[in-house]
Amino acid sequence: MIEIEVVLEQDGTLRACKASGHAGAGKTGTDIVCASVSILMGTACKTLSGRKGITLRYGAPEKGELWLEADYDADGKDFLFAAGAFFD
Image (cartoon, rainbow, N blue to C red; front, side, top):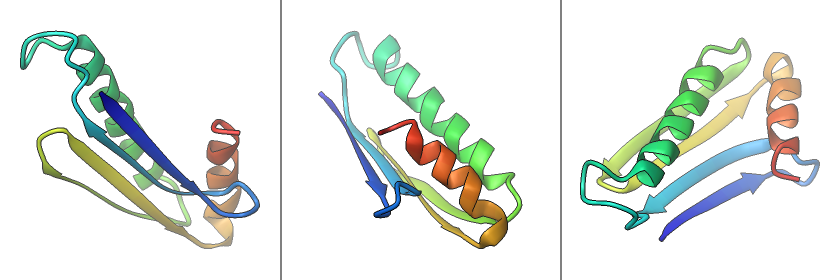
């Protein structure tokens, strides 16, 4: 099973996200569910890292684990707030 953990500030601003585990929906390297989560996490990293006012740390320390953490200034706050609203 894939578990997704999202960390929001009290006002709903996105601070962190972690995906871990395996879907088990197919053989290793052919699991469309795992591939989908990987693509979405990668897209989130690319999108956030390119935004003015957002400093992003991210990694994949082992197979089946992806994480990101965002720091921001006034220029990045609104974008991360809007991203956090997706999870509300």
